[in-house]
Every structure is written in C-alpha cells, then in structure tokens.
Amino acid sequence: MIKIEKLHKSYPIGKDSLHVLKGLDLHIKEGEFVSIMGSSGSGKSTLLNIVGLLDNHDAGNYYLNGQLIENLDEKKAAILRNKFLGFVFQSFNLINYKSALENVALPLYYQGMGRKERQKIALQYLDKVGIADWANHLPSELSGGQKQRVAIARALVTKPKVVLADEPTGALDSTTSHSVMELLKEINREGMTVFVITHEEDIAEETDRIVRLKDGVIISDEKTLKKSKA
Amino acid sequence: MFDIDRWQEIFQALNKNKLRTALSGFTIAFAILLFTLLFGVGNGLKHTFEKQFAGDATNSVYINSGRTTKPYKGLQSGRRIQYRNDDMKFINEKFEDKIQFFSPNIQRNMQVIYKGEQNRYNVRGVYPDYQPLESAVIQDGRFLTYLDLERRSKVVAIGRLVEKDLFGNKHALGKNINIEGISYKVVGVFNDPGGDNDERYIYTPFTTFQGMYKPNDELDYIGLTFNPKLTVDQALAFTNSLTKLLKEKHSVDPRDQGAIRVRNYAEGTKNVEQFMGVLNIIILFIGIGTLVAGIIGISNIMVYIVKERTKELGIRKALGATPKSIVGMIMMESIFVTAIAGYSGLLLGVFALESLGDSLEKYFILNPSVETYVVVGATIVLVIAGTIAGYIPAKRAASIKPIVALNDE
Image 1 (tube, rainbow over the protein chains, first blue to last red):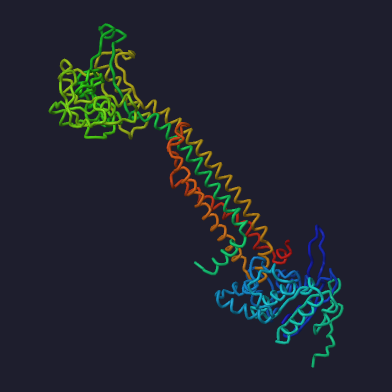
Image 2 (tube, rainbow over the protein chains, first blue to last red):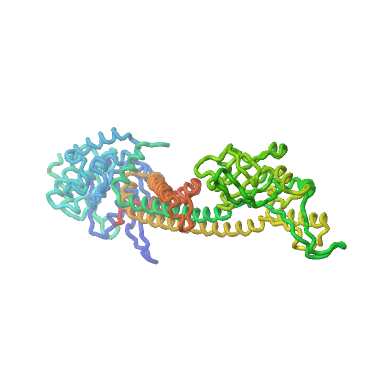
C-alpha cells in the first residue's frame, strides 16, 4: 500500500538546510495498523506529510497504492488525496463555520457528489463514529473527543485506502484518547490501513506495528504482542 | 457553468462570516455612494453653469451697423451705414452653406394696450428663424411663419411676461392687442431660458413691420446662427470674411471698427467651453480619486480575507480541493459580494441625488445627477478591482503547500 525507498527530505533554514529524513525505507501493507513513534524533531510529522502528499520529498521513491509519486502538481495531488487518503489531525482541522455533518460531507463535495447523497453518506459515517445526534452542531459546540470523531468520519467518508492520523490523541485526555484509539482499531479491523503518528508509548502499544524514528532514521520496526490478535 | 452546490457553498461561507462580508460589501457600497454623490454634485455645478449661458443659441452671430469713424474712398467719416434687404440677399448668397438660421430685425419700443392694461415693450419685426436664434420656446400656439411674412399678417408672438402683464391669468392666444393704434392678433406665447428681459419681447412678421415703420427696405440689424458643424475657429473665420465683404460693399475702411459690427458668440462660447472643460477635469479627478480610494479599500480587505482563510483553504486542500476550485470559490464570493454591494451603493447614491433635486440651487448646484453608464461603469471597475485584488492572494493561497496552510494560525 505504502512503499518508501531511501526517502530524503530537508528544509531550508536561512542559508543552511536541515536534513530531516535521512534515507528511510518503509513498507506498509494493506490492512496494517502501524504507528510511527518518535520524539519531537525525529521527523515523524515530516514523514506523514510526505506520505499524505501534503509535502514533497527531495530524493528517494514513494509508491502509493503501487503508483510512483513524482512530479506531482497541486491538482494531481489534490485528486490523489481525495481518492486515496483520509486525514486525522491533532488539532482536528474542522471548518469552524460548518456543522459536523457539513464537515464530513466536504470531501464528497470535492468529488462532485450531489448534496442530498453526500449528506446521506456523511450521516452514515457520523453514525458509525457514534455522534449522529450531533450532526447539526458546529465544531465549537463539540468536545475534543467529539471533534476528533467528526474528523475521523470525515477521513473515512471517501472510502480511502489509508487513514493518516497525526497525533490523533495529542489534544485529548486519556479516557477520550482510549476511545478514539478503539475507534481507529475498529476501522482497522474492517480492513482499512491506518497509519498513526504519536509520541505516546501507550497509544503506540495499541497498534499492531511500531516503527521508531530517531533523528531522521528508523531505529526499530517491530510487531506488538497482542493478546487480542488471534 | 451554474452550479447550485457551488453557490450553496459560497452563500454559506458569506452567511457564516458576516463581518467579513459586511466589511467588503460596505467598502464597495460606500465607494460607489461617494462616487455617485460627488459626481452628481459636480454635474449639478455644471448644469448651473450651462444654464447661466443658455440665453441664446451659442452659435449666434449679430450684424449691427453704426457710423464710420474714418474717411474712405472720398467719403467722409461720420457717415451712417444703413442695412437694406439687398444686404440680406448678399449675405445669404455668399455664405449659404455656413448659415443655419437667418433673420433680419427691426426693433422699436412701443406702447401696447389690451383692454384697460397698457405698457411699453420692444416690438421686433423678424423672420420665423428668429425663434431658434433666441432659443425661445413656444408654450401656447405657434411662432411666426413664412406665410405670415408673405401675407404681411398683423399677428404677434408675445413673451410669457407680456401675457402676464396685459392679460393677468387669462390666455392671450387668439386675442387682439393694440400696438400704437394698430390691432394685432396673438398667435403664440413663448418663454425663453434667457430670463425676464427676453420674455418681454413681442415678435411680428418682418415684412409687416418693415412696411409700416421703415422707409423703403431698411432694416436695423441681422441675426444668424452659423452651421453647428463649423468648429469655433472656422466660425470665427466665417465672420471675419463676412465683416470684410460687408465693409467692401458699404465702402468702409477695412480698419474702421465702428461702422460694421459683427458680433460672434463663438468667441464667448470658446471661453465657456474652456471653463466647462476645466470643470469636467475637476469632476473626473474627483471621480477617479474616489474610485482609486475604493479600489485600495477593497484590495486591502480582500488580502486580509484571504489571509484569514489560509487555514480553511489548507483544510479544503487536504480534503481534495484543487487549486483551481479554491481560486474559483474566492473569486465567485468576491464578485458576488462586490456586485451586490456596488449595486446597492449605486441605487442609494442615485436615490440620494434624486431626493436632493434642486434643493441646493442656492449653492449653484442644479439638478445633481449622474449618467447611468458612468455609475454602472464605476461599479464594474470596482468589481473588477475587487476580483483582481482577491485573485492575487487567492492564487497564492491556493499554491502554497497544504501543510503550510494548515499550520497557519
């Protein structure tokens, strides 16, 4: 699903440049539930941005769903994001003047789907994440956990190949964090590839595979021991 | 092209961000309102000015005579020059294509009586062409005709104030008035934008008047208007050559200024036109200044709006919005708001001018108004300016990486 070979990325800082990713190799298969662990500055967010086509890489190869990503202009990137990727952000990134339902329906709008149909589908997904009752509330009227559920519903609504979650629990308390992780697990059990970035050990523990990143290189890549996994 | 979904998206964005919408709308509406008012008031000044100079046709030429001041060809100075019917014929033959209206004139101050009322008025014997020369406007009946001339009819067209003096509130049309013992029938009443004096004249057919009060075929002076197609310089050349020929015909020294006097209003018109030109430039300057202020205002606001929305645009991009759809959305929003606001500013301004009407006449502002195409044009200019001002930051916002936009707080 996601295949990365010798990925490099550096950011210009003044006259110097900061080498953030130093030749990463990573292969994530369909249906995996992977977390990227690392302290801040380890390059994990950069990795996610590149994987999420929000940013481009300097060198190396990146295959998304078997397709080599190169020379992507904004338009192509937008279409690929819409088609293959769903995003969950730490700060939710909901549009504050749109209701939960409208936020979830927005990616479908960019697919060109009709209003009635996309509202119907959006409502199904809100129901799936358990907040259908809050469909017509604005983000400011929702709790953090509820906002993240809306964001997850929005990430899922286009039936993407991969859900990318950048510190999905970073702004949530532990109980809420746990329930959000449960939701992601459930999604993963339905066959969705889920890619989580976190710096919290216990959050990473809930995934199937932990990739540890330090100073732009992978230092370990191992399966977690899970009782529930039969 | 028309996409209901897209419009719904736009209406929602506008509706949920009322301050933003109001701010840009207000700028445009206010700019157009100011533009309309200033332009209208400027036009009001212009109208007042035009009215001050509206007494006579601006292309009129009057040909008077006097006494010679220099001896010439053996003739003494102090000789009186008398125009006769053959002078009329002479001028008409020489300058046929340069003359628009033409009329000789005989004028006498006479006692006029109707029933118990009497007064003295200037009575003029003229051709029917004298009406456009004086810019007289018939309000009742008719002016003199060539048939009246031919028949030497005893008919008169009287000024509005003559009617008022002699007839009070009654109508003069069809009544007979007595001018120094001879009865004339009133066939028309006129008014004249030139003012009270011009409305106290009585006009009677030239032939009638000449037959009664002039020996032979003498006449007092000649009025004409030159062909309006002539430029001011051509008109002045025409009257110069006319003066020269008349001097030759009457054996007057070419340097003699007193005997043949040709007064061309074009000279005055030239000054008036220059003044109007300056006034126009001032009005234009005011208009352009207001527009520029409006353009700067709307540009600032558009830049601010797009800046404020950077994060939202980033989210939309992450969800699959193409740069084109982002730019399109911002453009349509801004065109929609500026067009609606511009139109309401326009209506408000026109309405304000309308209700002002002539109430500011004291301050030399008469009928302040604006031509429709000017305000509509101004509105379109502002809409386009708003669009361009929105396009540049929108384009930039659409092309920055979504991750940068998302991190924008």
